[in-house]
Length: 356
Image 1 (cartoon, rainbow, N blue to C red):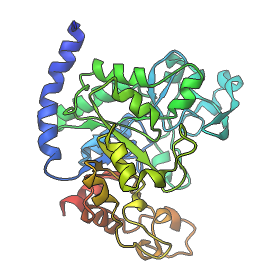
Image 2 (image 1 turned 45 degrees about the vertical axis):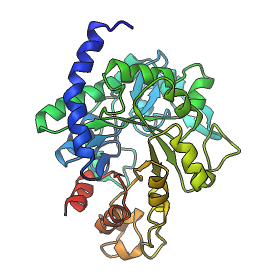
Image 3 (image 1 turned 90 degrees about the vertical axis):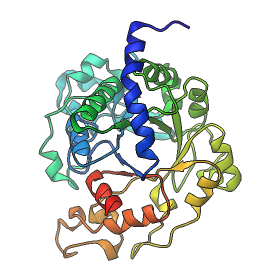
Image 4 (image 1 turned 180 degrees about the vertical axis):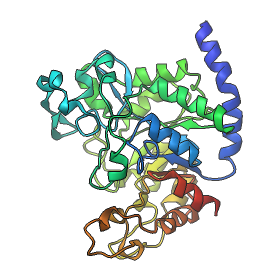
C-alpha cells in the first residue's frame, strides 16, 4: 500500500490526538455535544460547535448526508427546509418536492438535490425557534459545513483549548441514499482515511440507526462504530427486526460483533414517566457484559423534555415549555447507571453534572 503525502500528513497530525483521547476516555464518561451546543445556537454550525468546546465537550457530533455531487455535509436530516433559509430563496423554489424517506412521506428541499456550492450559498437557522428563540437570534450567521471542515474545526479547537476534541459522525438514512445512487458508507470510510481517523484509537465514533451500513463500513474502516437504538420501532434496513429484540443479551452480543458501542435513547437506560425519573434499567450493565460502551442520547434542559418533578417556573406561563428545568438529576442518574458518555444539547450542563 502506498500513502500519499496528504495521508501521511493527516496521520501524523492525528497521533497526538489518539494518545490523549485514549487517556481521557479511560478516566471518566465523555460528553458529546449533540449537533454542538444546539440548545443555544443553531445546530451543526461553527457557532454551536465552538460554544460546545468552550463549555467542556469532549466530542462534537455532525450528522451526515450527501450532496448531489457526492460530498458529505452536516445536516440533521437530508430535508433541509427546517434548518436553512432555502424556503426563502426563490432560485430554489422549484426544488421543493415530496419524497418517501424510511417509509415516511416528507415534503421539502433535500440535500441530495443540491450541489455543495449551492448548499454553501444557504445559511443555517434554528430548527426549533418556538422552543429556542434565543438560538434563533443567530439565524443567518453560519453556513453549512462539510465533514472535513468539522474535523478541521475539532483539531483547531483542540489546539486552542489544549485538550482533544473528538468527532462523532452519524450516517443518516444510508438505505435511502443508496437507493438514489449516493451510498454513504464508502464516502464515510474514505473521509476517515483522508483525515487520519481510520483507527480504533482515534478520537472518533461512527454511529447509525441502521444495521447493514454499520456492518458494511466495518469492512472498510478500523474506526469505532456505534449502533443507535430507539425506544420504539426498528432499523429501516431490517423491517422485520425491532430495537427491543436487539437489546436482549443475545442481541447485544450480535451488536458487539460489528460495533464497539451502543447509543440507546436515554429512557432505555433511565426511564421517566410524566411525573418523575424512574430507577435505572439493566441495559448499561447488559451492554457492558457484551463488551459495548454505552452513550445514551439526548439530554435536553427545557421543561418540555422533563418530567413534572424537574420542571421549573409557573406552568401557566405561556413560555413554560421552553424554560430551563432541573436537568442535572437526569444527567446524574445516567452517570450513576454507569454510562460511558452522554449526548446533550447543553454540553456545559453535562460537564457540570459529571464533574460535580
